[in-house]
Length: 596
Image 1 (cartoon, rainbow, N blue to C red):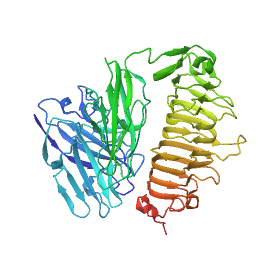
Image 2 (tube, rainbow, N blue to C red; image 1 turned 45 degrees about the horizontal axis):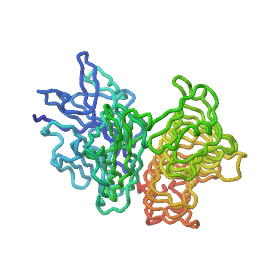
Image 3 (spheres, rainbow, N blue to C red; image 1 turned 135 degrees about the vertical axis):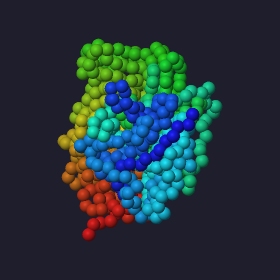
Image 4 (tube, rainbow, N blue to C red; image 1 turned 45 degrees about the vertical axis):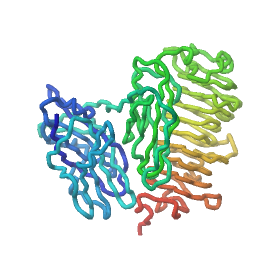
């Protein structure tokens, strides 16, 4: 059955090179018997037979940020007259907006399931050549399917920027009767579902480079591996690239590869990532998920296979359950045999708050995957989680409070992996050190030397205060790496508003991304200081509120460093000292111009 769609482009957007990249969202508006409007993901099967709905693509101004566009799809039986709530600015037709010289807008329609573009429906508005391609105001036929709209802004200094912003529809109102506003209810977006296959047949091959680019995608799983899952489990990848990510492809057990074209908020993690849903209902056994992060131009990254276990298995996932009290960690660990598949969980009993279960002392072990959940871990001067250099010494702190004292050195040492989820930490000399890292939804109340010296990823992390006080003579740093070649590190949505120390202080670093970081240093401490060889590094949407410089005298050598929508210091042009170099790209280019 064919359905008729008329594409009506409405709204306004700042078409400057400072427009922020965000996320595409597609919504369907329906009216129930009582006239209440609701929304859900656009699915042609939900509209009903015999109805030829009009699909409107509405570009909205952000109520809080004039540089951000918001996109809403609305479907109904007829074009909907609509108004904005009083808190939101008025709109204008996007056709009348001015484009920067040498730039163009492209409206592209994709089949959601396959990610294939309907090129015959592409519409282009060019600053130089006017409009061409399909007429967006005429009737166009589309088969039953789910579709994505991408609005691309292409400028001379940003060849592939995609405008895509999640709109919180609860902030807006649709006027179904012109004079009567009806609010929208909040509902979760429908996520792509991973369909299983019969198992992977060998390793996933490295895809060919895209275009002329050579820089590899920067990507990390935002998932703790080998955990036990049940029901619907939302999992994804955080991915970035100096030229942008085209998509992340996911496959379950050799099943079809699902393309995730835009990063959105994963409701399980609260992080912006490329994610899909794995339905573990009725399954038992290991599930394998593979991912490939594909850039707009450059080298795709094939991530390591993610293994998750569906169903019950007391042998793989035993528990030590604790009532209220104080326990020595050594005695607890002595109860655990070597365990290198799955996790042994040490947790508070049901109904017992984590402040009532306190675990103290030094943990010295190897070849064990140990998870602490819902407890308080107190560390003295020499207390740590020591893994004896074993590649199977893994530590996971979930819904845990970790408390050091004025002499506590580090949490994990000489281990392979460390994971922190929904956890609070305070008073550690070095918070993250000694093992590969995933820290997500972590609040660090105070650190007093370095926060991070690890490989891996920090996402949604807040450092309330970094201050050495009288506890050490070493200078503190938010990020610092000694004598290592840091590779594929991601810091996303990290803030440190009271940083009595240096901010980002890397040595040799490559293939890494720092995105939406907000660092405010106190006194003369540098918010940004880079040394060593710097290859394929992205600094995007960051605010370094303090001095910054690039230390050529300390071996700084850029081979692909991109600052995108980021500021350093308070002196125009708000860039680090030494930024003028052919291997350093600044976007937007207007940022390099000092106002007269």
